[in-house]
Amino acid sequence: MPRKKRRAAWGSLTQIDSTTWRLRFWASGPDGYKRRSKTLRNATRLDAERARSELMLAHSEDAPCPTVGEVWRSYALPAYQRRVDAGELSPRTLRQFESVWANHIAQRWDGVQCDAVRPLHVQQWLDGMGLTTARQALTIMATTMDHAVRFELCAHNPMRERYLMPSASTVERRDEGVWTLPQLGEVWRAVSGTWAEAAVLLMAFGGLRVGESLGVRTEDVDVDVVDGVPLALVEVRRQVPNAGKSATERLKTPQSRRVAVVPGRAALRLLRLAADADGWLSGDGLGRPNSQRRLNAEWSRAELPERHPLHNLRNSWQTNMRWVMRVPPYFIEALMGHAVAGVTGTYYDRPDASMLARVVAEAYAERPYDAGWDWCG
Image (cartoon, rainbow, N blue to C red; front, side, top):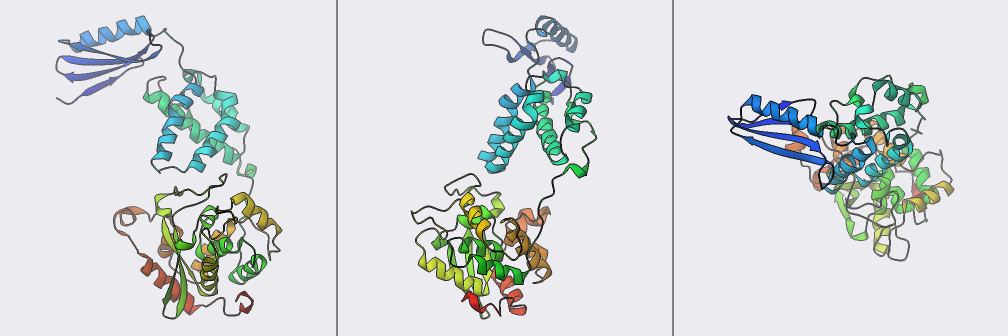
């Protein structure tokens, strides 16, 4: 007979077979306040309900409902960490969640019992934040309270109600500017000869993320020529995290492990830099990769045609590949290390490096954007 679970305001009752029932409930004991279970044999449903009621009278006041902070530390945070360990969530994202908790959630909700959270109080809390922060904080709180409901610490999740979010005018607008291909040539000129040159080339002409551009070693760079177009094939398999000083093979997503393809003059320059470097393509001279912090400092000193954040080089590469080089979006997704949506992306689509190289070579051959960049060698 399939198990049947009866949900109740206190505890849970599961039918194992026709005469066996299992009760689960929270109660105090010699080992503290924790989840417990009791099995009833040769019992009818009425017997099981009566036993549940007796246990509720005996234990429902044993301890106060755990606080939101206790649920965060006992259930939500360990669950996020397990996702990081499994490669489903990046360490940087977890650090962001912890920061949002510390700065925007803990002061208001850490000491509040889960069953005392009220929608009115949630709305008042959200009203005091900007839209982006409110969305992040509400998502984290909703996930935390899901654990409280799952372990029967409270009957429902008030964070799943529909709330009026702060106005979009409260969002701090990010710099979304991109460089055109001629401007990227000027960007290259601005960093030419500096230790940051290789990292900038990988982002501007290969679509790497900032941390990925610093995690490339000389052996990761290979040469290819397709229909006369010189290519640098760059294996992306590690990154230097935003707050880190060493490289890790834990990338943002499993799809981030890929081969990036850089064509033309930028490819020839990368191959020369790889031949001259010792170990890391953008190393610090002491056998270690450089940090994102130092790269941003170098970037701030460069005389650029337009000033945008360093990570906008990847945005510029994507925009130019699609709208200038006319590369179809599904090729660009693979080159960027993005997962292709749907069944095809999950089970079937597996382009290799030679396929990607040919796509980039054909696009470059049709529109060789660096033909006049004689200064770059």
